[in-house]
Length: 385
Length: 163
Image (cartoon, rainbow over all chains, first blue to last red; front, side, top):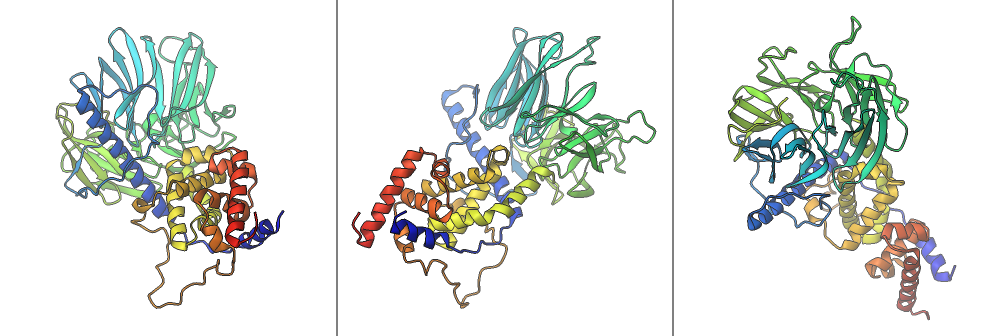
């Protein structure tokens, strides 16, 4: 080491600066805002391209969300009365829409919306089934098959960052894939032997949920948790089947339905340890309809006037969860259903009547809802819980 | 709130001090270091799923920080809110002593071109190896070596020493 290097080591190595106090909540708020802003900008950019070419925006094989984007000019602030159309999905006239993405389809089979991302299984002409992601103004084909019974079973993480699906390899084999939504990185694949009998799905692989880290909860008679970099572990300490899709708690799992025991109750959610042990964290009123927020802090569900868990005539919006005491979110009209969560505090709902619906975005912290301007036509269909 | 958010918070609490020290070394002022740290931590938040799966979340975050510094973009769009919890010092309060005042080489290091400065700061402030610096800069270890050599030559020249 030369004299200069020694001096640098002595002087710079002793640099003593006291760090500032960091407000993590403010950082997370800035992050959520930046994520929303990026999505809006990319969607707008794609819309310009589509308008110029007169074509339909379909990008196959990965997005380009890491590119640099110029800062957006300040826009009008959102009011409690109205907001602009978001990225939520709807279909009408043979076209599936999600924000500025448009995908012509023969038939929509299944649609999930979470964190600004749409996952859909659609049927196309020629007996072809497609599993597609729609986000950032584009549709991305991630798997396709000729028609068969349950061509895909797929789940999207509550924050929209990770997708997992299972496909039939042969009668006794299923292939499971977990991948990142952004960039398309495959986090892991595995095959499972099944004894599916009777054609009703019994004994087959059922995916319950995938979290932002790629941990998948699935069942083949028993329930397993699998991190793509390790072997699956059987989940122990649960009394009923795990809820699937948007009812699955992002931090672990949630019970669905009553088990065989007298005291088994639905709607219990909790964490899964690395060894597979389930630990209860709380309970929500409803287990088979509703949706968890992107961070698992709030569960939104349709309920009746008393807040009771009923599955009919549920025309009011309720929320509760680890971050929120049970409360009703006032709506201008009867709740048709929950479309999905935009982020940790905003849930998209449809109100009114079928073929005459209105879409609103509700802030569950402020307990206010804003009607989406220029939303889907009244006769559009949406994925409703 | 589930584990993902909790682990981000834990990471910020544990590593923001070290990242701030690097940011201060790169920018040379508290205000710019705070801005750079904020930009970095928001970027880390946006990619947290990827960051926490990385072999070293700290190294990943350091790479984000160095890239943000080298890209030369002012972090204006993130500065509408400040992440410091305490209010700013009232006008008239005595300024806090600059920790670099006692460092005679410091003004010369601050005057280095950004990439040379990054190599010097990562080497002598953070005590990183050539391989770790190469990872942070996204270049080959040989490039780190040549950049460090150029930086030392620049310093010697500005100190009036023969190369």
